Image 1 (tube, helix red, strand yellow):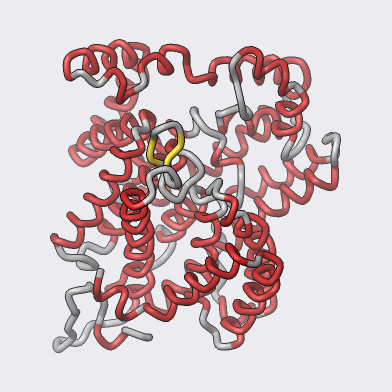
Image 2: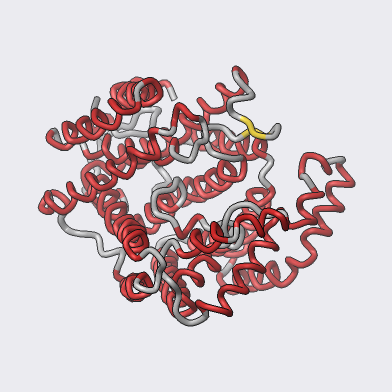
Length: 448
């Protein structure tokens, strides 16, 4: 971590200044942050631009009033990132065509937008979702080609740094970084933190699997310890279950694909017994309060959300949906009725959200592109299918995959993009005298 801070202190200082500026004088931040990234672009510092974007979308998930600036400035920031990609096309060549398997979905989703009560808003949400599938893969491809080892190392250390700072801040001001007695870190709620850490854990393992010499054993253990610590402190049941399933699927798929798929089928078939098993484990080890079993039995309001959403699907959007943002619109329209039933929020299910927004036709198109992308990844690593099934599992409980500018989707797009890129040892031949520092970065590639 010291090595990371020493070699990337300038980037950390820039992000810290953004935070102070946004917290103290938001209008000025809305002007200076975009000007700052234009300056970075003029100096071709795309790595700083990319990680600045990651930083802002993580902060934008927070509910602290002094960080609200991140939600507004990230939209301007993303538009500028897209503009840099399209106007500096030569710098990003060859283009990454990750979006191709999803083109049918996006075309159909655009058609659905014309049935939306607010066509302009729906199309803007559609455009944002389209651009994230173009921008992230192409930035990842460019940064990987430019300096693969530095880029991947920086990404892992950058996220670990944020999670570590979050834990330290919690012990200095618990009230600020918790909600209803549960640790949420720099995220909006504990479940959001748990989801982020679960996905990041899988991303970490797949990067290590693709590039096994990137980190040493001590570094890997440190990363995993910080991730698990955040999940334990957040007490996110979905994250516990996801990581348990991932570990089980990973062991099965490493043995053989046949046993991997058999394990997946058995796991999803026996999921009806999951609550009883959790209840038994909690009673045995005295974890009833920690795991919040009363909420688990009630379904945490999700059953109410799913029942309502399924009703709307059958009434209006079974085959053809009403465009992006229709789910938010319909749940807001019936907010009072749903609150009386004990539910807050929207569908809490990515599949249901896609069904409401694009109909079953759009949902199947999306699933097709999703499967094709992970099948391609499976050609490089056995972790592909365990990750695919676990990501698919989390999508049952939150609508995170249906939004563009959140801290979760970019991680999946990033790791799927890596599947289309050559490995480090294929980029250029290694010299016999080549040395690596303890940080895991090739000495000659270090930049300040």
